[in-house]
Length: 77
Image (tube, rainbow, N blue to C red; front, top):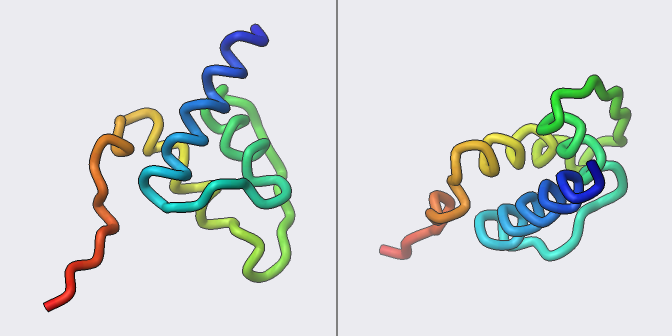
């Protein structure tokens, strides 16, 4: 089971850095996203601007391999 958890953490880290351009998780984000991917219940209270949105956005990025694309690139023009 620990190999699965490590693999999940690695995939979440790739999505975090490649898609969202962040290189570390805020408190509770990794645990919340990991619980979602492992189909576990999670109660995650976070303060305003605590990073709740990434808890919802990271798991689909891992499940659907969105991390191979950069959908959030901003084009000047």
